[in-house]
Image (cartoon, rainbow, N blue to C red; front, side, top):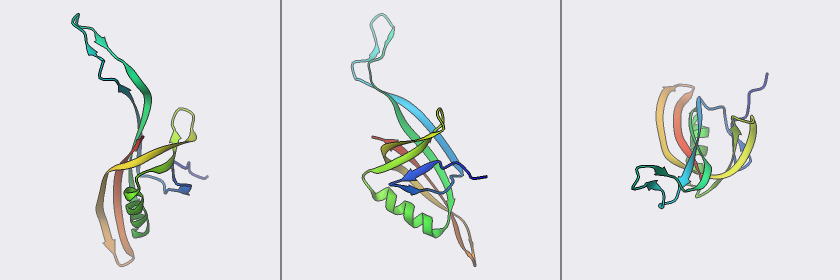
Length: 120
């Protein structure tokens, strides 16, 4: 049975992540806040801004590819929308890039790479 494709960067299929978390947030205008009466007023400018937190366990080859992607100002990302189970395309960038060596053997090294993809 084939696995689901969770991420696509610039039309390149990305390996299966060890962890995958999608969050949606709203962007509010500065005019919102708490009124004098104590009620909260929200002036939502944009709804459903996507952030995806991922962790991968990869070889040196994919570590090098992720290093190139993190330097790009913008990536066209296809991500698995958990509501529709379809791939949705959007423009994103990589933030919070972290690398950790998991193991190093005579066959090569295994790296843990984690970062957050943020929608523009």
